[in-house]
Length: 482
View (tube, one colour):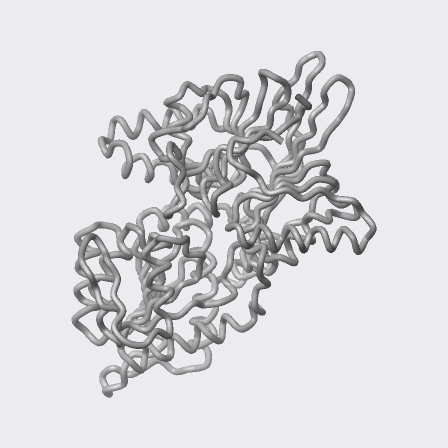
């Protein structure tokens, strides 16, 4: 068998569960991500509590970013006997314990002592790696492998991984994209394509489409808030605690800031209905609150335009109209209050696909009332409640959804806010694969639906043909070595 080679333990059947092994020789390998599969297309054995593969020979785990579909099986990795280092970026090193603590409490145990021991064990294995600096991870007489983390623009700390493998005097550059962000994220520094890649393992989430112009999303968001003020309803935004929530808060702060500069506050004593200046933005997610605090502390990793707001005395992630909800009792109070009153509000709650978390209680309480609106700002995996609700947008007649074994009629307005994708589109993925003048020679497509992979395969082949560069593009298969 030729080395280095790659096998896949997830991320081949859909857009979740990324987990790839880089085999350096017959007995030595690295694991890139160890994610949880979600939705209907869940392969047997790919669950949080089970790993589904043998860990022998794995020298280290390298984490591209800390979304659960990239790190959710780390507890199972430890349970299977892995004791190596977990390499990740410095922001990811701060965020990973938050994400895995929440997953551990939900899926394993909520006993404080057990959680504390688990987190202490986890943190012993985390090794922060600065961006753009080579880190030796395996070094033997005839075998050496170094990794370098480059900004991926997907969320704070996200990286694509360059692996330089030296074996018997020859060198091979293998690049794992992780999840690549789209250009123009207001908080994150933009990504640069790799210098070169002999082999590129490339995500394909939006390999079959181009994103709409992001400039329109602000107008759509503003129009939705105006509708809520008129209808006296609540905008429910199912959002992932990490990444999308912070981008939304950043955008909302800017909207509120400029609206409050332009408009005088409502005079409630005179009978004016509270408008933009009194509109609460409710963040109802303890995990999102913890993540947002870390985002605020790590502002040195923000892009320069975002840091400039801090210089101006603004707090993009901690503004005056932002209300946080901690306890479950307070959460239920807020749900009941918004259901029974005509007070407009914006609620951001997890989880992003409506398959659990506090957003479900809001949906149960408000889906049947046309005053309210469900706004989707992220990808909804097939089979999730979010995908069902999203599909009802514009539907006529009776539409209902099963939430926790009970049917709820969908009368609330439903909209998808374009321009908030955290993933690169087809053109951006192709541009990444083309590198900085030295296109990838072999591209392995992962993390996408079948149609998206086929479309991206065609686009990559066409672009390489235009520049006169040969390329082999393949679609990854689970467990297969390449």
